[in-house]
Length: 366
Image 1 (tube, rainbow, N blue to C red):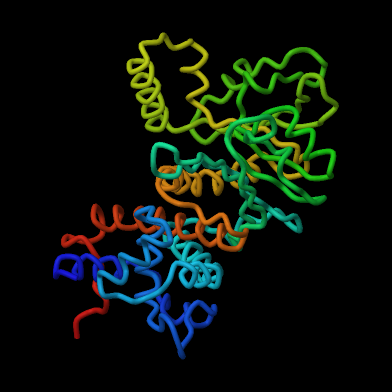
Image 2: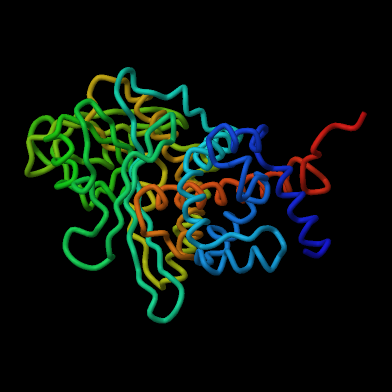
């Protein structure tokens, strides 16, 4: 490997969480007696697979050519399966470094789960397109549900209805899951939802049974950080819920309006007046009725922080071969993608803000 590539690898290693090598052995990803016995070699091979999107076979060939290790594609798959816990640990550590407090936002005794989905298109003109629907349990960030389907056909879209739930769980999701059938499905199983509101997809009634005038309620919130909450019912259901909303800061509003303007200019469309008004607030719908609105919004803030990473994860997931042999290897692949997204975020933050030379020192000078 040339010096430039070795230097890049050393810079990247400086961003790994403390104890990452020891944890590889503790989690069973490394075997001392045979195969790949060095954590840095194993992680380097994994990053070639999940970061560059190479198939297991091509990854094995490139690893041998680079002089890192000799391993078959079957051997690499088995090693990926054994590394699930290690890769998840790496993700949790980097999320914590990014300021996401996973341990401080649990809803009492209830299990909190983040639900999301992404699409993977395999390379080549005839490459298959897959939708991955998954949920991550907080604070462990453990992937407790993973379903791989095609992108076409009934029942393959993003919906709570596809996710198995248990009573007392709280499912957090973005506006794509703000749909009546999915919400009803979760409530029928004794669990609750917390989603970013999509007003067009979820028409609401107020306590009197008349149409809920969301904009009129939101305009009551005049100052940044002011929170409002109102009891509502999705039209056509008996589901009891709440709208919780907070007004953004003036700077956040300005940035939101700028994004709307750019999008309208790009698509050559005219923005509706209510769109400008909605952009001044963060509005969520929840069926959790006991916690204060500020607490509900704080729980969603954790979902939003992780969503920033998910956006990068989704762009990375479009590149690559997804191991489809079993759920274990697929989950490990997902954690590997999430690790690359988190590492990219840390690299950008470090290069821009924390170090004039672009990375952290492995140890302070004597």
